[in-house]
Image (cartoon, rainbow, N blue to C red):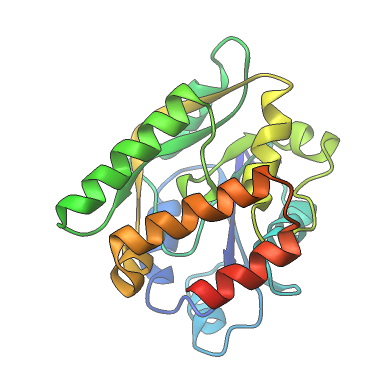
Length: 226
C-alpha cells in the first residue's frame, strides 16, 4: 500500500486540473486518482497525460469520491476538489495532524484566490467555523485514515452536503483537526454570483439542512439560486 491516496472528483475541470495534479504529485509515496463525473471538456485527457488513472462514475461528489476510495491503495485518504491546490509538504502536514491525540480526521485552512477584501472575510469565517466548531467543508481537502472511512461507510449518497454530513459523523468519534496551512481554491463561485450572494446562499442552505429539509430539495434550490 502507499501512504496516501489523493482522490479528486472532477467535472469539466480542464482549466484547473493541471496545477492541482502537479502540486499533488510533489509528495512521495502517494497515488492520485481522478474520478470523472461525465466531463465534456479535456479533463480526462489532461489527467491521463499527467500519468494519473481516471475512473468514471455517476456525477455527484459523493458517488465520485466513494468510487475513488473503493480502489485507493493508500493507508490515508485525501479528498481534493479539482479547483483546489494543496500547500507545500501537505503529506507531512497530514501525517502530523492525524497523529495528534484524539484526532479522527482533518482538513486544511482555506485561502481563496482573489484580492477582494470580502474574500478575506469569508476566509476568516471559515477559519472560525473549522477551528471552533470543527466543521470543515469539502473545499478544505478533508483527510482521514482509510480504515476509518470504510468503517463509517464512506460518504452518504446525497446530492449536496455530503462533506458536512460525513464530518458530523466523524465528530462523534473524535476531534476534527485543522492543519496549519491553507489549500488555495478558485474564487469562481464568488466571482460568478458575488461574494455576499454566495455567502448568503451557503448559509441559507446550511440552515435549511439543520431544519430537516431533504438534500434532494436543497440541491434543487441550490441549482435555481446559483
